Length: 98
Image 1: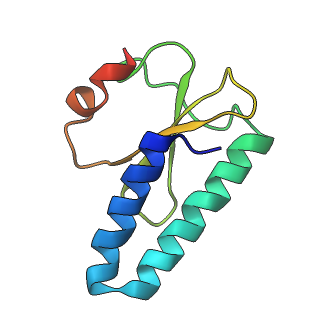
Image 2: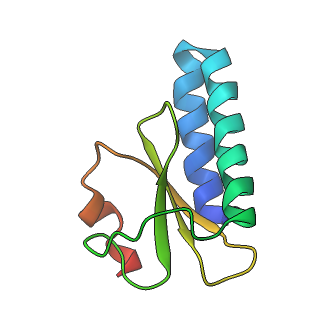
């Protein structure tokens, strides 16, 4: 499951990537969907990052891309709540998760 906010972030990322490389944008979206399915099957695969978010939030890097998926492990299925670029100021960008 992907939250509305994460869907918006994903759409913006895919649109940005597609400007230069439409195939890479499709591959990125596919990888995010694959990771979301893995999270659904194995909710504890991500890492806790207490310096970024407390409680039930876990983080997993999208293989081959500089993006993180943030999800809640305590809901079933675990929802992806954010998709963020790792170069951003993560403590600030994710401050709403604290």
